[in-house]
Length: 155
Image 1: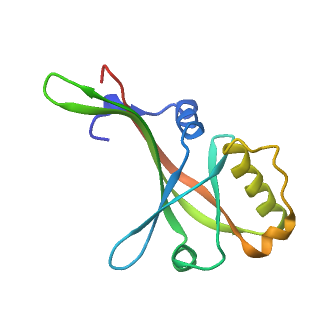
Image 2: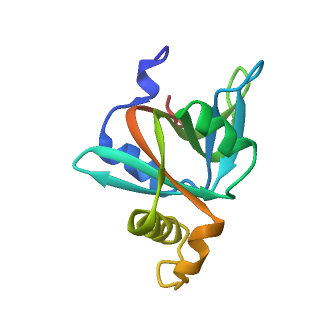
């Protein structure tokens, strides 16, 4: 990372950023340009191994690209505000970028993934019918590496 003073290496701090992020963006491999799509998400921290969950339709560009190449990039950020500095205007933020493999979930795993998404979106008590499973794909991204950074007033 170019500006080491902005890097966040503590996993608990990274998880705090994830908890306060509303949307992640998936970077998918496409030709000739990458494809980036925002998705609602849930996540897990299993002894330091982070996983993200998201869902979507059973057909479409996102699904086609994942089927072609399941290796994805995940980005999330929190915008705090703009700030005047002596030389310019800057943005105060927190962000993370992770890389991992996207896996389609089935049955109980898909239900678990949907529950994680609902929980993250503050709908943990919402009940849903398993009848949604045939019309929705649920995915898990097992994160292989993640970096995070922030810009605070004193950075």
